Length: 392
Image 1 (cartoon, one colour):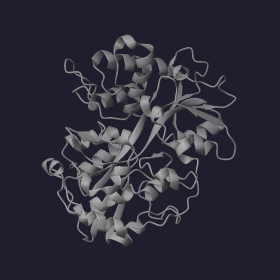
Image 2: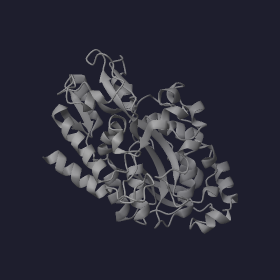
Image 3: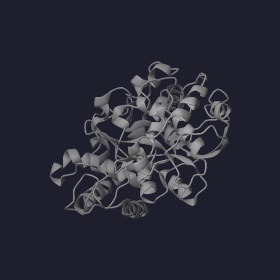
C-alpha cells in the first residue's frame, strides 16, 4: 500500500553476505533443531509468500524495490506470491512450494504446530541484534524457547472517526460497542474471526469479573461473553470490512463515521486534508506483529537465511514499513525513513504505547494466558462461531 513516495535506498549486501558466511551457530541453536550453518554463497531460487507491500520488486512502483538489490548481491532469484488474509497464507504455505513467509500472529502458531516452519538460528541473522527488544521472543514467533523467525513490523488496530461527525472525539471503544451509541448505523467492524478478540479487549475493561487477561485465551464463559457483545453490536454496524479500498470509499461517502481501522487507512483519508482522527482507546487495542519465517521443507536454506537478514536491514526495513504503513521492527530504521516523522506517527519507539496492544495470536485449546485449570476455545471454533454469526 502506497502512503508516501519513497526514495530508493542503496542496499549494500556484499558485506552482509560475507558476515553471514563467517557466522557459526551456538550450541543452543544447534540443539534447537535450527540450521547449523554457515550460510553459503550459493545462488538459488527462493519462493516468497508475503503480505502485499512486504517484498516489492519495482513492479508496483519502479522507485520501490528491495528485491532486485538482494538478487544482484546474493545471486538468489526471488519469486513473490502475495496473499490477502492469514487464512489464505496458511492454506498456501501448507500446500507447499514456498521457502519463506511473512506471517502475522494469527497464522504463525498454526504453521509452527503444523510442522510447516523450522526454528531459526539467530546467530546466522546479524541484523536481528537491532530488533526492538519488545518484539523478540514473543508467543507468536517463539515456542518452547525456540525462535521461529525475525520480526518485520507492527501496528495497532485503531479507532477511526470522522472529524465533525463524531463529537466529541472518542477516547473509548464504547462508541462502537454500546447499544445506545449515537453512531448507530454508521459503525464499521473488521470482518474476520480474529475480531472476536476486539470484543474481548473491551470486556477486559468493562467486565473485569470475567477474568480475561489475554483476548486470545478465552474459556467457554469468556468466549460466550465476547460473542454476546458482538451480537449486541451487530444492529449498530453498517458494514463489516476486509477490503480497505471499500472502507475508504464508505468513509468518504459518509456512510461510515467510526470503527476499527489501521493508521495507514487514516493516513490515506487525510492525504490532502485532515478528515479523520485515529486513536488507540483507553481500553487498549488488538494489533499485529509480522514475522519472517522459513519453511521446514525448503531446499533453498542459504537463500532463505540471506533473505531474512536482508529484509530486516535498517534501510530495507525502513522502506518496507513506510511503504506498507506500519512501525518498523529494526530500531535503526527510524533514522532512514523518507518521512522523518514516520516512526513518531506509528509510535515505533514508544515502549509504553505497545503495553496494551494485544498482537494477533492463534487461539489454542491450551490457554495462552498460562492457565492450566481451564480449556480455551481454539481458533477453528472461533472461525465456526464467526461464520455462524455473520450468516445469521
